[in-house]
Length: 173
View 1 (cartoon, rainbow, N blue to C red):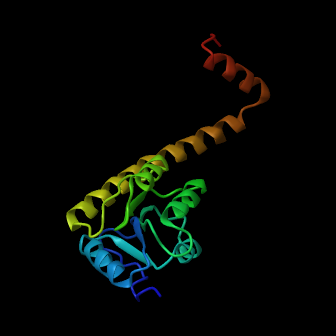
View 2 (view 1 turned 135 degrees about the horizontal axis):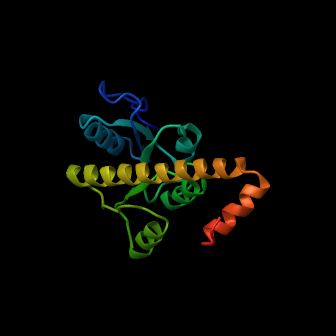
View 3 (view 1 turned 60 degrees about the vertical axis):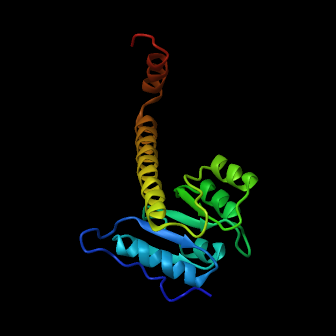
């Protein structure tokens, strides 16, 4: 069961800012992490399982996911894979007390930005979250630009598209 800390707290000077999604089956660990992150002004939402997170995540809000590697039900690695397949993937930071080389390699290959061990020092957690949020902002901007270019390309007439392809190949228009 998830502790009663699932509502996001907004910092007055950062309304609508990114959300840090914490996913771990240990309620006391979630409480401790959320307090630390909220003390730094972050909005935090806590979930006790991957299923709970997936059913409640707000896809229209930027953020990052801080996941426990080993959870009942889908593991943190499985959740990472599900997030990566989505239209708006979240950057992931893993926390674990039972990490191994194979799991950390799989997590890094899947795009995880950090893999600190539990118990995690507060400063290490904050640095990992900051890197994840920075990466998420860069990735979101890249996806936005790609959608913009796709929209512009789709507005071209068939002849304009033909010329565009030739110009991209380096031929004069």
